[in-house]
Structure formats: structure tokens, C-alpha cells
Image (cartoon, rainbow, N blue to C red; front, side, top):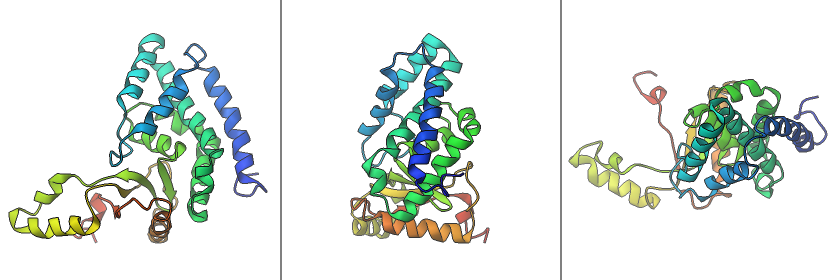
Length: 236
């Protein structure tokens, strides 16, 4: 029975995730037990607006130490154990319950994907791998699932954007940023290669609906941004 069809999908996922966590942690038994929660907790101190790709220096140093002392395979296993441990924590967190119902349903769908098909997530477990960072962001509730895309809750607009249109366009761009209140934080949406089932028009509309409801959870966010080759008007 899938989590979505289970009478209590969170309880079902919690049990499956806990079993997977125990297996993952057993594979890094030689690593100090305090290293894993310390790695996860270091991401809580990331300044607003840095985005999901930012890796705090303590986490980078800790991962490097694990790799140096135990080898690259152990470092990969450590990152997978971090994802599953964080996912278990999130399933127990009141933050999950405070998400809009539609966002929570998408989030649980991704959690089920990670738990029931862990091989692709494991294969991506390198610290700077974009796919790892997206699954880790989901597991830590630093990213939300939203239909066709993931929502990075702590992104921002680079100041270089002010100059993209040249000096002639600078006043207009300054006025836009003044109107929204600054450069950060913004929601930024990203496609995720591990989940393309809703990458279509309806999935994108669902993403926008999710973003609209998420503003109630994150009133500090100034708006939503995105960037990709498929936004180019020449393609459409």
C-alpha cells in the first residue's frame, strides 16, 4: 500500500523512513554519532536569501573530515543518511503540519519517492550535486514540493540584475525592487529531474497555486522568481 492510499500516510512514511534511516546509519557506523545531527543542524543557520545551493562552512568541513577519515564511499553514505534522518525529523515536525494541505500532499509524495526508490537519491549524494541538494532541501523543509517544481524558500535577486538593461533601464529596475521591498528573500522555483511527472501546464499552474498559499506561511517573502532557458520568448 502506498503512503497516499494509507489511512495515515504520515505514520506509514514515518515507519518506512525510520527503517531506511536505521540501515543508512548502520553503514556509517564508524562515524561519530554526533556528526550527522550536527551536519543537518548547520543548515538552520543559513542567512535569508542564500538559496538551497549554499552549503554552510561547518557542513562542508564536517563532510570533508568524514571523507578524509573514512573514504569517499562513507562520505556518500553519510550524505544519504543525512537526507533520510532529516526526512524523519521533518515528518515529526509541526512545520510539516503548518504547510497548506496541497503543499503538504506534494511534499509527502516526494518523501515517498525518496523512501521507496532510494537508489537514485543515493547515487546523487555528492555535496555539490544539484540533485542531492534538492532532495536534502526537501528533507529539511528548506524546499517545498509544488506540482511541477520545487520552491526554494530563501532565495534572492542578485544586485547585478540592476545593470542587465544598461543605465537607461536602471531607474525602472530600481523602482520595481523598491516596490517589492528589496532583493531578498524570494521564493524561487526549480524543476527537479527526479520528479517530472507534473512538468506540464497543469503542474505549473499547481505550482503557482502552491506559491500563493505559501505566502501565509512565509509572510517575509517578497515574491516569486524563476529563470531557465524555457522562459525565452523565442522558444514559444
